[in-house]
Picture 1: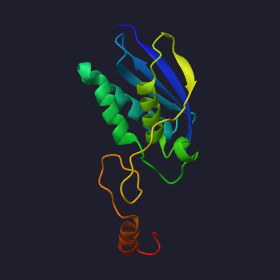
Picture 2: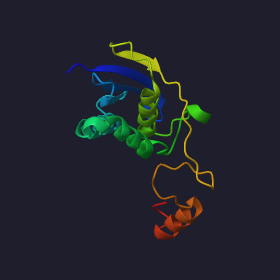
Picture 3: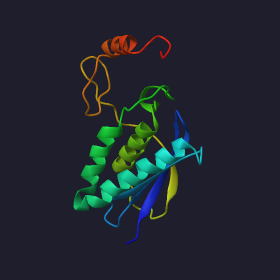
Length: 161
């Protein structure tokens, strides 16, 4: 089996990331590799783990790989942490969000003429799903941020906050 791939260079809140998506001879996504510029760090290990799990899910999906890839995008899109980079459609909220954006971009990419692996700039064109209160969703239940903050404030002693 010969795979062809594309590598996306994405700036994330945890550093510059290179996300490679390889496809099989039928054009279905087959494996994902995510590396972060901080090699040997916990973040680098997390990037490798996410890539391995996505690759396992794609290889296990049989002929439904593209559909499974779309479901992976839906789950990872919008995951955020303590910081973010970029604005608007170019905003990247976490390493997981960056992987989702690269995978979505790759699924939308239609030029199948190149069999070579290449580095592409990430031209984000998808929009995130918004709930009625304006919070991005990714298939998980929405929580009211003020209720959560208030509950945490009451749960933990002052010295831990």
